[in-house]
Length: 111
Image (cartoon, rainbow, N blue to C red):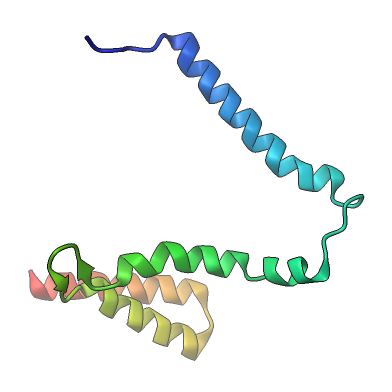
C-alpha cells in the first residue's frame, strides 16, 4: 500500500515551512534594535558566510571516496588553481571563470 498525500497536505506543509522560514528571518529585522547582540556574537557572525561557503565547498574538493581512500580528482586541481588566481587578483568573477575553465580543460584532457 503506497501513501499518496493529498494536495491540501502538500500545500499546507509548504505554507507552514515558508511561514517558519519568514518568521525566523524576520525576527532579526523586527526586533534587532531592541535586543542587542553581545560584541562577541557580532564578531563571530562576521565569519558566518565564509564558514558556510567553506563547509559546502571543501567536502566536495577533498579527494576521498568511501571505502577507497584518497583518489585523484580534477576538482581538487581546479580548486587549487582558482585559489591561486584569487590570491593573485582578488577577483571573484575571475576565480569562477578560471576555475571552471581549469576543470573543463582537465576533464577534456583526461577524456
